[in-house]
Length: 330
Image 1 (cartoon, helix red, strand yellow):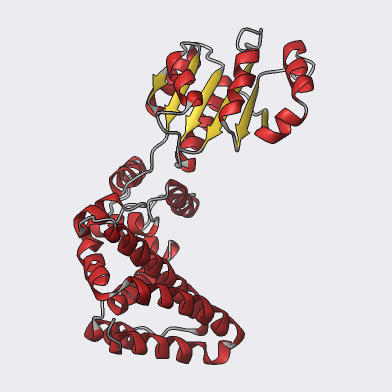
Image 2: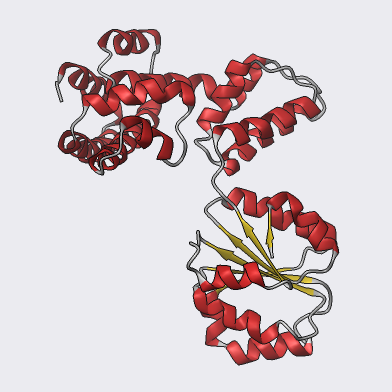
């Protein structure tokens, strides 16, 4: 049967034993697994990859059937799976394994997948898709946390927090965890403390610098450089942000070659591009040819190694790179 992630609590209560979790959103999957653990009051988890099971398949089936492997409620999580993992489910579906839950953790599966199709059709099986988060879903999660903890937060700071997480729920949870730890015994946190705690102020400057430079905005690029006294330790972080953004431009340029409009490219890109960044990214797409951005990616990789080996002149190396980019036509 097909379920949404938020419907899992109801089905777990009905003692369902077989679950297929598919999709890229590992953070959301982890939350769902934790939900099942909490409801079953068990911390006994056994993790396998498909190959491990099929190397000792008969023993695995026998141990499940005889319960010699299990003294209490257990959860088995099987990852790196292929279509053939369904043969395991087929073999154990009618056995008495009420104290065992088997979760198949799969990457995205299209509609032609027999594994997905069987889980969707069979009433004893639970099929849940975990699609990528977008900035809206992450903002809702962050908003819920701040509301429950009675922390006032501006839309601007919330947007920065979500943007920094780059569409990744795990990143967001990590940042929220920092804030939760800080709040213990204190009860209140200021916006400035949030920015400092999550390094948002610093990283926003880094991100702004890379965006301005790759957009060929000479005035803004020089302004950011002059307003920030970047250290040698900052240089690797900055150059990696340049690399991430350059790779995004490269991917978008390739999408553009497939006769997609710029707006279509931006809408279909994963992880989602934050709405307020779309105009900047459009400029970057227009400013770079596919060949030039590919060469830039290679150069940035070499530059990172050079910066690591020459920390005393790393700031000069970075500044020379940035100034060269805003002066060069692509």
